Image 1 (tube, rainbow, N blue to C red):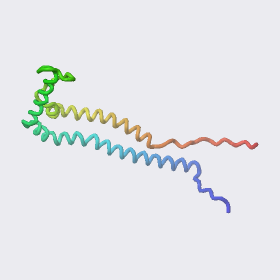
Image 2 (image 1 turned 60 degrees about the vertical axis):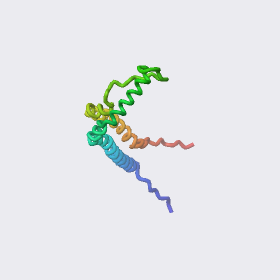
Image 3 (image 1 turned 120 degrees about the horizontal axis):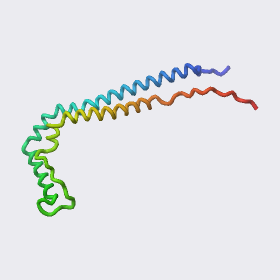
Image 4 (image 1 turned 135 degrees about the horizontal axis):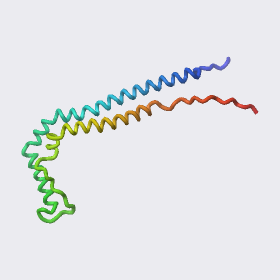
Length: 149
């Protein structure tokens, strides 16, 4: 019985390889787009939804007392009220906890920065991942004739 040749002709093999590679790239690009979209939307959404509750908890007298205790400790370590500790520290100037000021005054700026920086990083990371997901190009070299000895 003669041997069977189940191989595809060269043109069909390259076409099959290209279609499989393109399909794989679309899947990778789609999955990356969904993940990137979630990373870009969920954290700012969590901040906006929970902002009022966090500001209320930071406005409580206990939170303000904790901040004042921290400032007193920093003042003591800075040398303003006695001997200096092993490290001289700066006393925070704000009379409010920084997280409260940030949530109240700078949240829109933080969301814009998240979008710009995360968007730029995600875009280039996505280009690299999708580009690498295609695999190597098929080798398309003409075969050289063999010289018989």
